[in-house]
Length: 67
Ligand SMILES: [Zn+2]
Image (cartoon, rainbow, N blue to C red):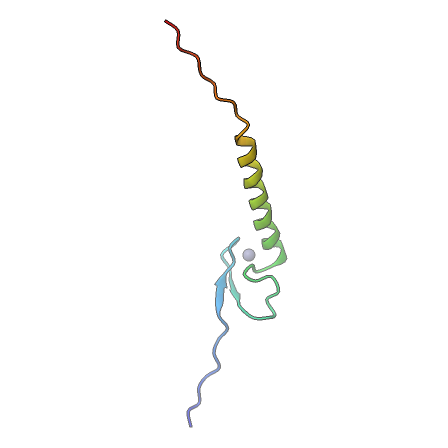
């Protein structure tokens, strides 16, 4: 009786480039649109961690107060 149209796949936004990615088993790299975007995101994470740890190494420079 009721001809319900097939539901469109749920779309998610690729965290790297913002492109809509259908949430289906065929989207192998979801939530990323491609392997490339996934690798870029992982690289950004690694870069951030690296920066954080190297930031800790900065020695506090003080003792510029002389009268
Ligand atoms: Zn992407």
